[in-house]
View 1: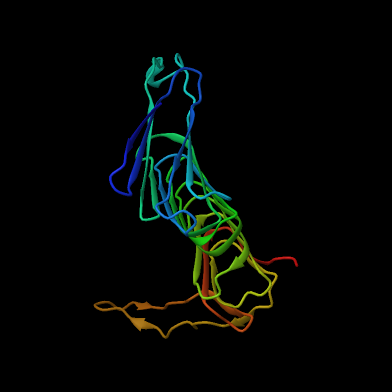
View 2: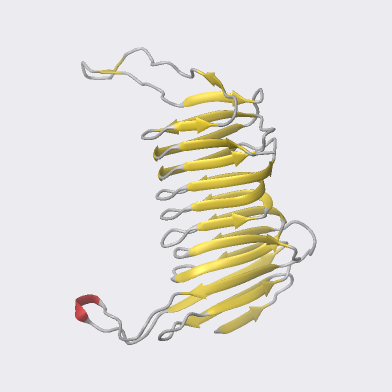
Length: 273
């Protein structure tokens, strides 16, 4: 594992290069100081492979841990070939004006675990393959994007926008930003979000092949009705559009909360007091 430091002005960059050896798993950790410790920071994490875990903690800097995959020499390869070696992981982290950017690029890491101050201005997280995204105990504006994996946010505060393709979306709020609109979507999976009992929001919900449930008293709006038949240009066919979204309000209304899945159910839960 090699760590390279470059410190121009207030910018810090760290590079981890880890060669994956036979029958070993490598875990390395680095600390990224903030330009203004104690003030809210922003954290952005991007990876093509592996899981991302972000944990709010009593720290004044950002601590990045990287775990590589285990690969064994002699294991079977394509066409009966045997693996002799190879494989590496490189993760970089940079800090500029209390914004920390962590990138794994195309490295096939197993997971990136990051400790951040509990009160963080913003989190932007994304991964694509072989990993889930998990956030816990953070008060922030959270934006999460995944493709082949779950999204889980436990005991978070602030606001969340969470999108994945193949996986469930599960969020449990301690408190929410009452002014922030939020969105939760997946293609293949359920959406399960627990809000404070004091929620005031406009709901926009859609499940193509599932059901929608709620603990809240939701005032349902019939929404858009089927439109009048419209003749398409240059043909004798007619187009009829039907909006099958469910619209409603909770607590008299507020910012819009959108939830959409194709294959799975939606659960809008009220936190137990």
